[in-house]
Length: 385
Image 1: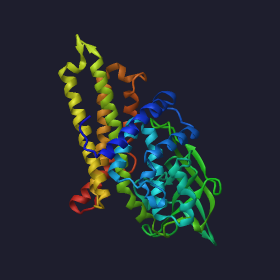
Image 2: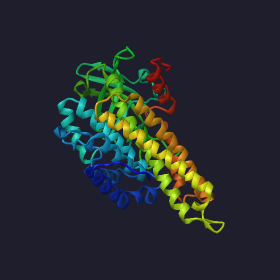
Image 3: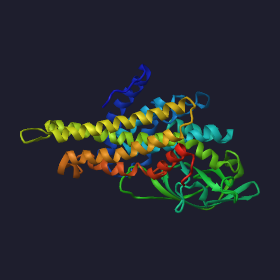
């Protein structure tokens, strides 16, 4: 749907991944486990295969055991995963950024112990930032880590945590001091050694993977499990937001593209008034509008990825990509349902599921309204938060 300029290597990587996703992943999420939780063993099996195509492992340098794939190629691969299954894309995204945090911030003993499992797909990480009263404003985190000799004792609650039920370990943002900006620190909690309670959250969509509440009740963690320096969690978290927002833009793009593909296929098959509905002007106009929006979202998303790869600051561009791609995901999926008519409301057709999934995408990594504020601040220099 729309021409994409790729190198020969990029095209080969995308084509190989698309074949695997079509053969081995699509039916798992849209037939076998449609709207049902995929067991950890099955998800780990799929993750193990995807890492061989560069997902998760591609974000990590060869020095640390990864493939060191450039960010534009990574986003092109991630788009294919999201277009196949938004639920499959979530553990890919979270494990990718957990691996990135370990490779760049963790002390050697933690990196050597926990990074290999993420790179081969055998283990899962959760990243605990959001809390019941804390969403976009990381400064308000309340989960407390209190020093006790050579350990920290951590208490608090995290919510909307992806990979929660799957997680083997948690990278948890905690308050170690009262300074809003310099009082936050990351710790790694091993689920077996530093037990935390997990409760899955049932949602409108995205239920084939785990989104959870995590409860921490005086969890005792060695001080050596600190990731990054004490008090630098806010700075380190913000430094990853550009990249993670481009990945979430890829999710919006992926679900929009899949909805467009389903709508085009249906419009070429469904007949009304003596001809296929693609031959009716209003349907043709809707498809044209959908395709233009999808291509625009792709261009914004790929631009932000290319800027990150070149080391160019991309706060505004990443926010634009996330904002636009996720909003058009909602619009295009809605139009795909309309083109399907009454059939679009039934579980027999995929667009019903895509429409529900699309509604979720504008929320993670900062809502659309937060992205607007980031863009506005970049344009004017005035903070409207």
